[in-house]
Image 1 (cartoon, rainbow, N blue to C red):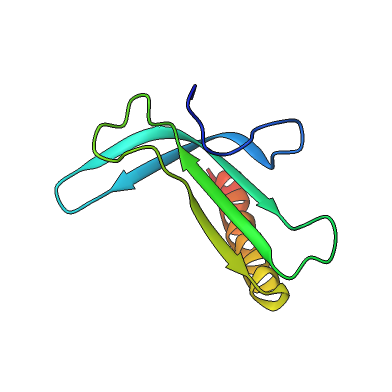
Image 2: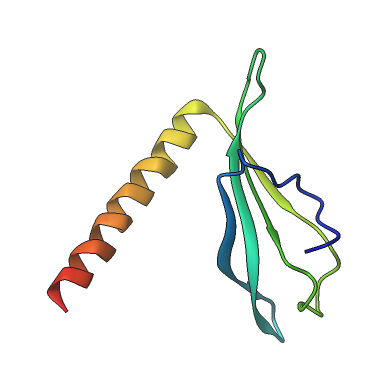
Length: 95
Protein backbone atom coordinates (compact mmCIF):
# COMPACT_ATOMS: atom_id res chain seq x y z
CA UNK A 1 0.00 0.00 0.00
CA UNK A 2 2.41 2.61 -1.18
CA UNK A 3 -0.17 5.39 -1.54
CA UNK A 4 -1.96 5.00 1.80
CA UNK A 5 -4.09 7.82 3.09
CA UNK A 6 -3.80 6.58 6.68
CA UNK A 7 -0.62 6.92 8.66
CA UNK A 8 0.55 3.43 9.59
CA UNK A 9 3.10 3.12 12.38
CA UNK A 10 3.85 1.20 15.56
CA UNK A 11 0.71 2.62 17.17
CA UNK A 12 -1.71 1.54 14.43
CA UNK A 13 -4.23 -0.91 15.90
CA UNK A 14 -4.14 -3.50 13.06
CA UNK A 15 -1.84 -2.89 10.13
CA UNK A 16 -2.71 -6.00 8.11
CA UNK A 17 -6.17 -7.57 8.12
CA UNK A 18 -8.20 -9.43 5.52
CA UNK A 19 -10.98 -7.32 4.03
CA UNK A 20 -13.66 -7.50 1.34
CA UNK A 21 -14.99 -4.61 -0.72
CA UNK A 22 -18.52 -5.36 -1.91
CA UNK A 23 -20.50 -3.40 -4.47
CA UNK A 24 -23.55 -4.12 -6.58
CA UNK A 25 -21.47 -5.68 -9.37
CA UNK A 26 -18.28 -6.71 -7.62
CA UNK A 27 -16.67 -8.29 -4.58
CA UNK A 28 -12.93 -7.95 -4.10
CA UNK A 29 -10.71 -9.38 -1.38
CA UNK A 30 -7.83 -7.20 -0.23
CA UNK A 31 -5.58 -6.48 2.71
CA UNK A 32 -6.51 -3.54 4.90
CA UNK A 33 -5.41 -1.34 7.78
CA UNK A 34 -7.76 -0.81 10.74
CA UNK A 35 -7.21 1.72 13.49
CA UNK A 36 -9.01 2.98 16.58
CA UNK A 37 -7.86 6.36 17.82
CA UNK A 38 -8.82 9.61 19.54
CA UNK A 39 -7.23 13.02 19.78
CA UNK A 40 -4.36 13.22 22.29
CA UNK A 41 -5.69 16.44 23.83
CA UNK A 42 -9.37 17.07 24.58
CA UNK A 43 -10.74 14.08 22.64
CA UNK A 44 -14.41 14.44 21.72
CA UNK A 45 -14.89 11.15 19.86
CA UNK A 46 -13.34 7.78 19.10
CA UNK A 47 -12.39 7.32 15.46
CA UNK A 48 -12.56 3.89 13.86
CA UNK A 49 -10.65 4.08 10.56
CA UNK A 50 -10.01 1.54 7.85
CA UNK A 51 -8.42 1.56 4.44
CA UNK A 52 -8.22 -1.19 1.84
CA UNK A 53 -5.04 -1.82 -0.10
CA UNK A 54 -5.90 -0.34 -3.46
CA UNK A 55 -2.87 -1.84 -5.21
CA UNK A 56 -5.03 -4.83 -6.21
CA UNK A 57 -8.52 -3.31 -5.88
CA UNK A 58 -9.73 -2.02 -9.26
CA UNK A 59 -13.26 -0.78 -8.51
CA UNK A 60 -12.63 1.95 -5.94
CA UNK A 61 -10.23 4.90 -5.93
CA UNK A 62 -7.83 5.24 -3.01
CA UNK A 63 -9.93 6.13 0.03
CA UNK A 64 -10.39 5.43 3.71
CA UNK A 65 -13.50 5.13 5.83
CA UNK A 66 -13.80 6.73 9.24
CA UNK A 67 -16.52 6.41 11.86
CA UNK A 68 -16.72 9.02 14.62
CA UNK A 69 -18.14 7.31 17.69
CA UNK A 70 -19.24 8.66 21.04
CA UNK A 71 -17.75 6.96 24.07
CA UNK A 72 -20.99 4.98 24.52
CA UNK A 73 -21.03 3.92 20.86
CA UNK A 74 -17.39 2.80 21.09
CA UNK A 75 -18.18 0.74 24.19
CA UNK A 76 -21.20 -0.82 22.45
CA UNK A 77 -19.04 -1.76 19.47
CA UNK A 78 -16.28 -3.10 21.76
CA UNK A 79 -18.85 -5.23 23.61
CA UNK A 80 -20.19 -6.67 20.36
CA UNK A 81 -16.66 -7.44 19.17
CA UNK A 82 -15.89 -9.22 22.46
CA UNK A 83 -19.10 -11.27 22.20
CA UNK A 84 -18.36 -12.38 18.65
CA UNK A 85 -14.68 -13.03 19.42
CA UNK A 86 -15.80 -15.40 22.18
CA UNK A 87 -18.17 -17.19 19.76
CA UNK A 88 -15.34 -17.64 17.24
CA UNK A 89 -12.96 -18.95 19.92
CA UNK A 90 -15.57 -21.37 21.27
CA UNK A 91 -16.34 -22.66 17.76
CA UNK A 92 -12.62 -23.28 17.18
CA UNK A 93 -12.42 -25.34 20.38
CA UNK A 94 -15.44 -27.42 19.33
CA UNK A 95 -13.82 -28.46 16.04
